[in-house]
Length: 292
Image 1 (cartoon, rainbow, N blue to C red):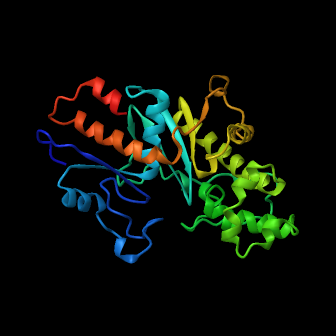
Image 2 (image 1 turned 180 degrees about the horizontal axis):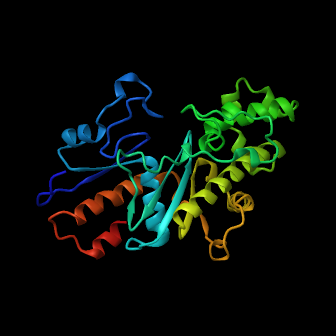
Image 3 (image 1 turned 90 degrees about the horizontal axis):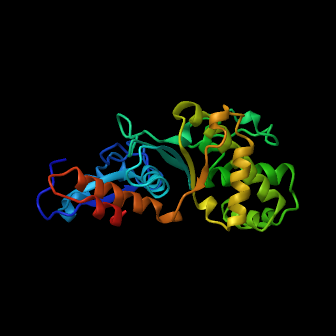
């Protein structure tokens, strides 16, 4: 991208992944861009040409990870953070040295497709968790809205909770929309579903701890858009299934993503501000701190 000219104001853009580091949507399609016409579409370039302004691009998981890192660690921190964002799928990002790791082709931080030792999770011995990407037993296959509707809810309804009220819904997709609210209210089956997801995250975070030795672990997405009591229970369950770490790593904090569903937009704005800072413009540190 060319250097910014005087008085140009860049725009921060984030979209559901997967997409390249420059904003070209995957040739295999994307979570929220199912129509074939979006495959391989350069969305950053199109927005830039339409608005005639420079555009800083991140996928939504990376953008949320940037915001969580900056909000919790500070805008000038050299800390390392790992964020997992639970939505229709599971995205996230790793931030180190103030920047999100995008990878050579933009697929850095596709954390949902990391394989985990899911057979360690008690209570799902007969489960066959298949992800939309084709992998069995990756994090997204157990920890996402899709996993609830496609795998976990049918599994528990058929084997353990035949008389559950959600069994009377018109479809599994309809029932899936109620799982979080019922778990928050203490429903036994729905709590069990979220316990499986929390333990899957614990196994995943264990891998991240041993790869990156992060300062902070962050969880976000719709599953955590709940009251503080449920959030605390969920985070405790995540930590309960993390294998014992070295003494120095045992107390790595786990936080809920600040500002919920707006985290991605906020992170995209931070990325745009970083673009200004790296340009020929003289953009003072005080302004960056205010904008972030």
